[in-house]
Image (cartoon, rainbow, N blue to C red):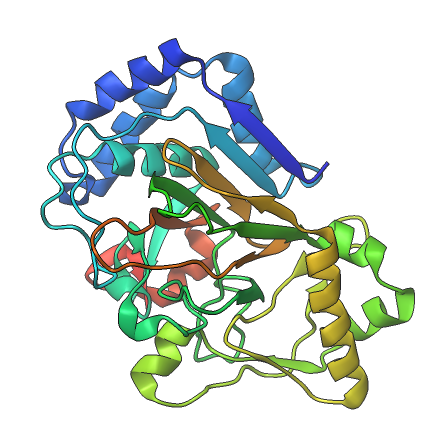
Length: 327
């Protein structure tokens, strides 16, 4: 099973929500906030708490988990139009939900080239980026991809997040935004063995994320890498939404077959307020459908975190000003 679904009992939702409503902006002291969120999320029934913890720690756990019936902010301002935080948001229940779930999986990180290094990302349609292969898009299908990180060492698949959490504050007005997740285990079972062998060869170069290339005006490719790696039972996958460049005709055919396999095996989720997705960024790839954006304050609004199980392997990227924010 690669997709798990959890629902909080109403009483647990209300207990967590009441605790979060009294808490301040977590960005004021993120480590203290994370400690407090640990205490709050201890209200989860043991079985549900273990399910979330197991999702983060076991090789054979699902790669996607939906958590439903989460608490909501009492007062939600219009959806931000510029992709940044909503300055008029009076409470921090959504941030508490996001970071509380995050803390059960690992450590939130920021990257300077993504949302200016913020730990909480507001994922909303932005008119100027409607056709971009980024989280600002809405008018084009956001291809199956991993969330990767530009790195001067030439590898974009090493310092990337281990997990993502997406928390829905406001759904798409027409309920037409679909998130897809395709697990590498299902993909590899679906593809012929020679195609998998090609995907396991260093015949591909990943393009840097769209947020990086937009800022620099040019594509920046990784060194040649495999798309699939690791043990056959527990494969890891890394693909760039902004473009993965095959180096041979065989690699090009394998990449096309990979995208087809993603579509054939993917789970589809329409996120609604009070629901969150936990995504293993190494076990699988995700995508997003087109959807109609209105740019009038009623658009879809998610918040996202990037998560590492531990900060130690990415210490070489830590910035002097913030130990959670990476170059």
